[in-house]
Image (cartoon, rainbow, N blue to C red):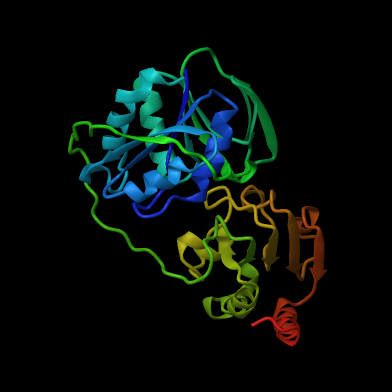
Length: 314
């Protein structure tokens, strides 16, 4: 039949995770359709229609989908499920919130955070905090899948899919959006940044964490953190990289004062180049680092900042 991708968006712009999920979907079942559910999200649907390999975009525009709450999204997806072999979403907070409900209602097992499509029914996915890769063969029937987007290339532009408006499903009213508190930053988004500099408990305090800011600004990098740094209150939760945080795969990942617990490595070890700065030469982070610098980060970071400035980085 076909595969359906749930678009990741904020009602105004389409997220790059959607492009990467389309890449995975195309390897499972073609043609690929994209579902854009939101409020006043016509621009998102037009952007989705331009993704190469997408045949059709389904646009469900209603107030009940403004925040993509699990209950109304579940009802919508169940109304569409018969037409698709596979339903996929990025393994983000949104995707992880919606698809388990859909899988339960369809009485199928969800296949979570796939890293590779071997065949339309066989996938690779991480287990044990990324320390092992499981090869999983799904039984015949419908597949509900979340995609670890750092493992797939983004589908290109140049598509010319049709946009079809579909009716909203009834809203049970079981949940309502209460509010959100988002941190604002002019830096790149953590999950899509080409350079990420992350700090750990070794920085010692929220004040010391600011040592990363000047370097991040010069490199146009996003700032991340280990769970230990987040738990200690140095930075907000949305900085967290790791198994229980965000998965990133930038061109350059700098780990500063991070020991390298397996939970943190699970979220960043797909980075193309990893640089580690730590005073403990036996820290596990050095086992995955391409470049390691053993030393006092409170001396190294100012020297690095100075060196970047002297080379014209501002």
